[in-house]
Each structure stands twice: as structure tokens, then as C-alpha cells.
Length: 331
Image 1 (cartoon, one colour):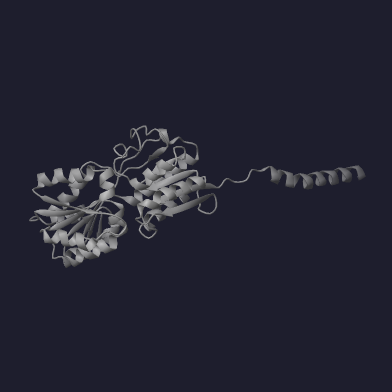
Image 2: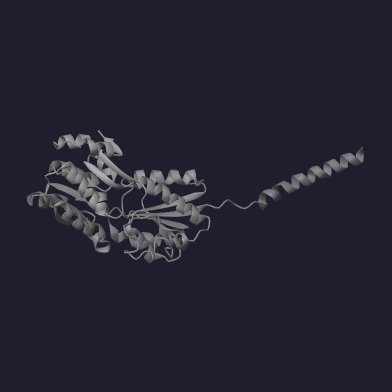
């Protein structure tokens, strides 16, 4: 009996002494660091970031627990991007997610080793970011919003709503168009086939002269407006929408956020969907995939969004055939 009791005590002592050792032997849980570099402001990116964070959560990454996200917003001041990119590299982030071509370019100049996931760029081959979509090479992968004839499709939609329109003003981000001229070139080709004349108006810098741009458009007889994607127009989307309403200029925009703010119509890749898909790239890279071997994806989901209240204020009747094709109606 005494021998058995002694054995029992020895077993208990061993268990007690070994418990903390077992605990100490467990490796600490890794906390990944993800950089997010944007040309926009936090408010302009709110819906996109919510989708990105939710997609990360669905993949098992919770901000503040097993992943930390470092945000840097240039708020339209593109000269800040280089410093922000270098800062993210110094912080030793595991991945950098870039929003827009200027942000991707700045990140590439800051590092050729940290994996980059681009989310809102035009043609990444023309921009020099990658060698091909199938095998990007280097440290860049992700998504492009490149889609052939997208500018032409927007002009067709304007023509469908305003059959008698003959002149369309086009807001062009000066910096972005210098780097990626294809959208404006596509618009010019499409305009010729639709019998339209384009009036190209460059907007430049973090605080463009929007009132002057609208005066130029209306004084030269523009009957409608198309805003091409770019940091300037997207950063000031509420102001642009308000001026379009003030000048009674029907307009088509690149994203649905413009329509939610009172714009007439938008057509383009679903940005929220792109951000969800960007999270899957982050997941793959954190698990060891090489960016050079992850094919770049093109948009698969496009949105046509129409604001009926704005159409009524402009005295426009939206054709029933177009309403039936719309993905969403804002009323």
C-alpha cells in the first residue's frame, strides 16, 4: 500500500513539473503583417476595405489577432506614395496590397522582394509591372481591372440613355493617362463608331479645378460626361457628382460609389469583388506561394448601376431594356 502511494505521488510530481515545460515547448503563434498602400482616402476606400477584411476573416485572418494591417493613404497626393512604400518595407511587412497603378509603381520602386498584390490597375504589362498575366515574374501578382472596350461600353450606355447626344466630355487623370493611355485611346475609337465627338479634359493633382473643368465642358457644348478611373476623380467623387448635377450634365462613372452619392450611372468591374479576391492572394502568399508564379486575374464581375432619382432630376427617361440589364437600381 505504501509502495503504491509513493508511486502515485511520484507520478503526480512528474506531471506537475512537466506541465509548464510542455507549455513552453509550444511555438508562439505567428502574427503576419500586411501593408495596404492606397492613392485614396480612408473614407473613399471604406467599402473596399470592409470587403477585404471580411474576406481575410473568412480565410482565418483576424486583424489584431493573427494579422496586423498597416494602412497608408496618400489621399490624392501621389508624391507621398514613395515615402509610404519605403516605410512599409522598413516595417518588414510580409505582403503589400496596392490600390491603383501609382501605388503599385511606388511599391515596386521600394522593393523587389516583398510580395505585392495589386488590386485596381489597368494594363499591368503596358505599365511594366509584369511580363505576362499567366506568369507575372518578379514580386508582383494580383488583379487587374483591365477589360477590352470598357470605355467604349460606357459611351454606348450614355448613347442609349441620350440618343441625341453628339459631344461627350471625358475627365482624364493626367498622371494616370501618361502611364496608361489605353482607356482614352479606346474611348476615341468607340466614339468614332458611335458618331460622337470627345472633349478630353485633363484633371491634375490632389485638388483639381473641377469648376473650371465643368465650365470648359458645358461652354463647348458637351451633352454628357464620362469620368475615366483615376485617383483625382475618385478622391473627389462627391464634389464631381454635385457639380455634374449643378451643371445638369448626365454622367457615367467607373464605380458604383459615384451612383450611391447621386451620380447618374456607373459601369465597371465590381471593386468589392476585386478586394475579396485580393484577400485570397494574400492568403496564398502568406502560405508560401511565389508571386512570380501566381497568374494575374482579370475582372469576372461587372456592375451596371443606375440612379433613377438623378435621372428624373435631369429629365431623363431610362429605357426599360436598360433597367432590366442593370445589376442595381438606386432610387
